[in-house]
Length: 204
Image 1: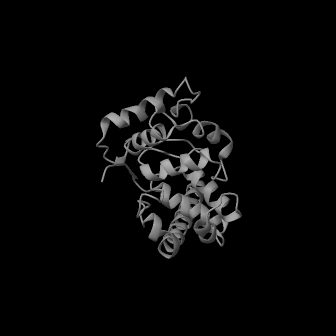
Image 2: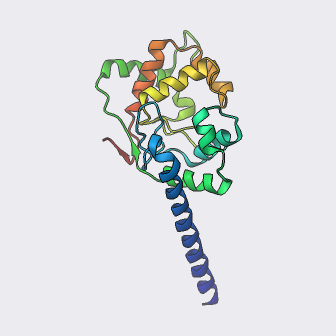
Image 3: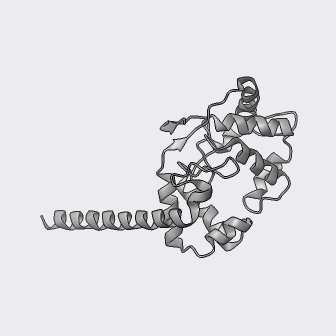
């Protein structure tokens, strides 16, 4: 009986802490994040990444990299500058818990080019299959981003930045891949992943 009461107390305390963290995250989102990323992480423009459904650990890393200056972006470096580790953890939990989104892809033929590259790569130019790191459905993992449903424009911009070494973090492997992509390949892959629909994905 005593052990049961202790366990219940711990669960209650954990629930209170989680609710408090959620409120902290909501407050920061309304103050800083919503104009670009939307209150639900849907992103207000294709130039900004969708954060809804993004992998939690990956979000934590990127926010810390922005805060600490390892990933350069005038806007995000300023937005993340004052965030504590606890606030970053809360934001990552908030956005990762939101329903993942996806795009309707109308140019099926062009997307098929991207699908081939994503699943098989290009052996003639030494490009590996994207799925070997980012997963069969673009879901990523704790260290790697979810690509499924991301804005095509944002994915293309990031691939170009990796290729030109303009992206200042996570560049070692991605530069060797992105620098070999033609513009057509880059756009095709970006289109394809924007339409990927893993489980629990919402298509607006």
